[in-house]
Structure formats: C-alpha cells, structure tokens
Image (cartoon, rainbow, N blue to C red):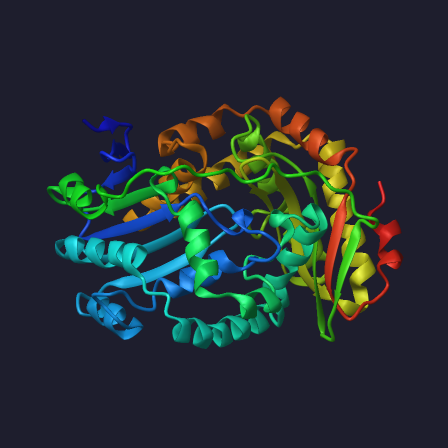
Length: 426
C-alpha cells in the first residue's frame, strides 16, 4: 500500500525500486522521470565526464527504437517533451506529455535506460558533440565561473571536477567505459521513478511490468568529501573579455543540515531578488554589475554559500571589496526585523512559484528522495521557514561568515592571483 505524505505518495516495486508520485488530478499533463543517485561524483580521474556522456548516449537508440530520430519521433508524435540532466550527485531522464500518453512516455524512457545500444560508431560521433558542448561551456563565463569556484573549493576530487569531464577523458571513452559505469551505479537501489500530474490508473502495475524484473545488485558509495586547503584562496581563469565574472564564497552546510532554512534566509537577505543587499549595493548604488546574486549550494555532505556577479573589469577591486564588505556585515550586525520578514516572505513566495507545475513539484520531491531517502513535504518546508527566528539567522550568519576564509574565483583578463588576496582577507 502507498504511504501518503500529503503532496507525495511513495511506493516500492517488488525489486526495491522506489516510486514517488505527486498526484494532481486537476492537471492535464503527466511527468515521468527516472532519477539515479549517481552523477559525476561517482567517477574516477580516468572516467571523468562519463556520467554526462552516458546521458547523451541513452538518447541515441535502443533495440526497438534504433536511432535518436526514432526516439524523438515517438515523443514528438504525442506532443511530448523529453530531456535529461546530469549533476554531481544525481542524473535524471524525463518525458512530459498529455496525461493520456503516460504509458507511451513510460515505455520510451524505460526502453532508453534498459536497452540503449551504445554503438561504437555513435559513441565516436558523439565525442565531437561533447567537445563542442565543452567549448561552449568554457566560452560562457557566467556558467563556467561555477566550475572555477568548485575546483578551488573542493580541489582534485570528484566534487571539484567538471561534470562535463575533460577532453582527454571524453576522447578516450569506449563502450566498456559506459557499460562499466552503468553496471556499477544504475541499479535498483539507486533508481527512483517519479510521476507527477494526472497519474491515471494502474501506474504501479505498469511499472512492475517495465522494471520489476531488474535484479537487485550490490552498489558502492561515493567517497566522502575531503576538506582541502588551496595554496591560495584565489583562483583565476584568464580570459580576454570586457566583463569579469566572479564568485566570492565560503564553506557552509550540507543538504540536510538543521540550519538550512536559516541559511536560506541569510542568503535571501544578501542576494535574493532586486532589492537584496548585494543587488542594491553592487548594481544600483555603484553601477558595478549587471547581475549580482547570493545563494547557498548544498551537496549531501558538503556545501557552500556565495555571491556571484558579472562586473566591470576596470573596477574589479571595488567590486570585490564591496561584496566582501556585505558578506562580513551580515555577520557583524543583526538583520533588522523588517528586512528579515521580507526575506521570509520572499523565500516562501518563490518556493510557491517553484512548485507551480506538476513537473516542478515531482522534481522537487524526487531530488530529496533520491539523495536523502525522503521527499520533504512543501507544507513542512513553509513551516520550517516560518519557524526560523532572528536569533537563528544571526547565529548562522556569524557561523558562516564571521571568521571564515573567503574564496574568490574569477574569470577575466587577469593573471596575478596574489593581487586579489588582500581584498578578501579576514
């Protein structure tokens, strides 16, 4: 029997595969997702990039649907949308469609995961696509700055590597590289099925027929994150450009930390929305940047909080000093009640907007179900945000920012990291 949890219901197939549903009978669509607790964190130096590469290859053809065109054509034929994504700790594949086409969507997505061919010729062709995606990523500083920052934060371990991999590891991939990775990590214990929207009848029976015969098998775990200290708290990616992109941040809390909601309010005060401290000070008052925001980014056993901006290269020192001042200030001075309550309302309001669609709702639950083994109820999130006190926020701001070593990642026309070190010193 399903265990009802409010927005979500949880089932388990006969072989242990978990199923999370978000029933919304009023919807006209359904989202079918297969998510795996596996991503680039589960790679080795020799296979870096294989999780993302595999995501591409699952879309390239199966025994029943031999080409990417066959797969895409079937989904186009029902007016559906298909996509996939790879993170450091999870990978997901999904199809959204009108609710009456649920069984077709499930059949296609399961066929892709269970029966992809990984043909050598297709692998070689896709290497060129991945390399060009990599070039595009590196040439987009607003995106690439995140990789520069995480390489500084985590160093030479999987959380510090690029999800997309390195050109040499992508070029070296063979069919055996894919099948070995999939055999290790794409197993029932790490697979979660998510279905949200107008679910219809007979879902669990349908999933038993599609997935119930997969035999459970042992799986390993990712290596615990190691706290590394870089020789310098500054990392540069030198690139000729008219704008510098930077991240200034520090270590914070993992995904399930009891103070995560207090941290959310701290980062909202700092950089959530166009009236936040960072946006107001960096853009509106000083005209240093077009965009500027603050956020927290957690993993299962590590986390970071940071500010990111794209700034005028001729005023880079002023931009760094201004952001550092705001990060230190929030730990030094209590947040006024009115500002804190605005941040609370902002957080709850954006969360409500985040869950506006069936797809967004099931994705929200599925990520935590996959990574932490428990889908958090939306009502519980709102209650937890409401329960955060001014003392909680002050304590967390001090814990994170007061005595911490700030780190600076920078993409722009600079080649001397040492010149920036005094600007972020405590």
